[in-house]
Image (cartoon, rainbow, N blue to C red; front, side, top):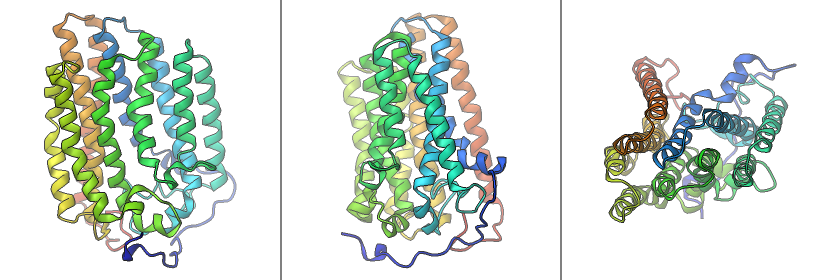
Length: 370
């Protein structure tokens, strides 16, 4: 049952949208691709390869590159496909933030919907070719599952994100299938250590997606998009997100106590717990309740980056524990450099976010992006 404030109302027109004639501009395509979200993909793939090295397997740079390119290709494919099938919901959303409500490239008329769908099909074909070249049936099976779930995240007939399964789908891909593909390409199997490390991060990923969908809940309800916050309502959704935080860290601690996760990895991951505390406090103070973009933006930003940072911490912990076990120093140096590169890019992203937040917004109001 929908909360009263979510009862569908007439959809507002997309202000300022000018139809595009002909092919999309490069600027529009780049905005549609939402490349900044691809930074996260370095982490689950890198973590999986780090676990492989930790388990004594040699680093195969060729298959590492294939796994990384595959994750990026599927991710951008999802953006193109998702924006096409989510256009009605994005048009109805007048309180979007830089992290929610889509790229606005289709809504603002920078790209035609058919160009978005066509680009998605091209990347679907490229993803399929990458699946075909994988050397084992296990890798091909896992990669195929990732492509199928990513495509049907919003595409019919499954439309998983319209049927209360979108949050779980994202976690299954980002914190499950992508790293599983990467580690199988390296080691031929999925080590238990990787599963134990990924399980609490997957739970936090579900909570993170619920936070993102809290910001879209009114427009989603208007167009019949039944995400978990729309299905259960605002307050129960907040309670689920809050509960997921201690459960995830408790799960991690239990796995460490059982010997499934090295204590060095546990310590690195637990260091991110203050972000959970901050998120809980913000949600309890109603930061997502009034759908004000200015209040929502820092919450969705840090909810998203909380998951990134705990996966980065897991990768750091695995590398440190592997070094303690005298793993291959060359492989550790390569993976350490990738993790350091992520750290620099994240610092740059944080600097940009603070710079934008400090800049006066002449368009401040209900449709400002915050």
